[in-house]
Image 1: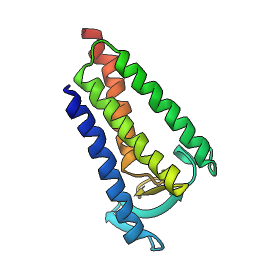
Image 2: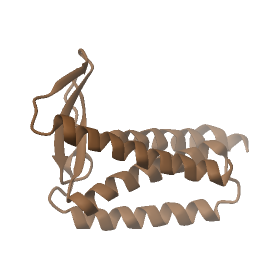
Image 3: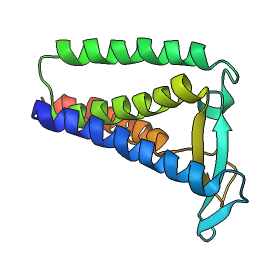
Image 4: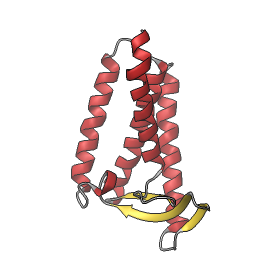
Length: 151
């Protein structure tokens, strides 16, 4: 994967996440949940002071520090990795963009704006950055479990 595409995915992910959170603040804050897709997905504004599933709730600076350490580790590992498969690079770009998107919220707001909620089962409210991290981790697992074996 070309380095410009790699940084383009990261930048695009951060911008998309930020714009979606700005939209949620303007249109969802202080409002009741809205149905986006019936029996599937609702729009529910939540200010999350924790990490996934509310872990370390109320400690945004600690979470920001942990995020920075993890981002640094991912960056060092990625730069040292000799063979950079496009799936691996896409996975890393998605994880980094999601982590940075939520890090920006933690640093500048003291909480992360979440607004997507599954309506068909009980699951924490999440955001676009979280989606990027999950898809990135899935791609990374695919890379490690299936694609690297052939290389």
